[in-house]
Length: 206
Image (cartoon, rainbow, N blue to C red):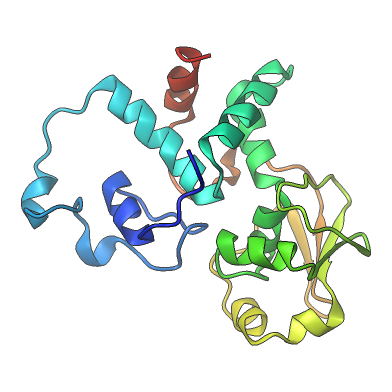
């Protein structure tokens, strides 16, 4: 399955949650599932366990912009670690460079941040890194090249970040540099998600 590029608010309405990494728009103007019957669809039948598990997994996959293959591979890596799988999976997702660029405020969304990375605007410890999946480490400094800080969409995003910067990122306002002060913890995901259901989804399929 490829990375999702369709209507973003429609997906958020289907999942019943705003995904700040996917879009700055909100689903609450039409807080009911998409479909020809409109608000009547809000009266859903009892959801199966599989559907609940799938929805929780999709929240993470869509917010962080991963393909199914990428997400599954990340889950397998997290499962092999000694730390609890849910905590490690969240850590791996949050440590992706495209997400860190977004959480630092350089990009309005993760797709926008990914574009900055791919177009070689991003520097990690002073060196250019153009791989969105690059995993930052504690102590890393993330910024943009000087000219890139003047791009209109970057200036606008820094002026009004989509989210408050997380505690694990230290921000230098003067230099416009984000430093990984510590590794992301279990509560780092900026929306409600039931990680136990994500684990249950993959435990039956690996």
